[in-house]
Image (cartoon, rainbow over all chains, first blue to last red):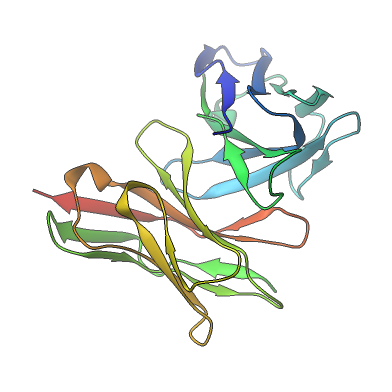
Length: 117
Length: 112
């Protein structure tokens, strides 16, 4: 089946630093990648939709200058949390739609746990 | 407006008993519905989906879900629960932009 990886799986950083999270589709090309954020014991919140070669579409309330998304290829999207603060601590999950597969199925990465001290 | 509701924050079931995790939805047009599971400290895993066809959909790990159009429901079921089924379960609806609309999640606790 389609596999999506995320790196790193966990990251701890100091307040004010920037953190980059990678999302890769390992065995398929992804037309679209999505970035979600999950707060403890809460549902996922869609942050942005990323299409290869174009600017990401951000959901209302998500700061695009704080959460930079780059989708440079059909297999890689990155989320950079700039000038991270403790309130940015969360579980970040990406997902991808397969170029060849049914568009209705999203394949999820394992998630990245970010802790900002 | 399209929406998904999971009315139970938590469901407790004894091991070996049947389990049901409820999901209702609201959509104009035909629904595309999904169930995902999240184990502790891990990302989401796809369980099953309903696009069209039989109302009873079978998925991973012995789970199944029944699509009921008249009740606008898509409840997740398993005939015999395992302790390892304990996790957070999310119901989701696909909107016209192929983005998922998520339920709030239901914590399933299976007691030995």
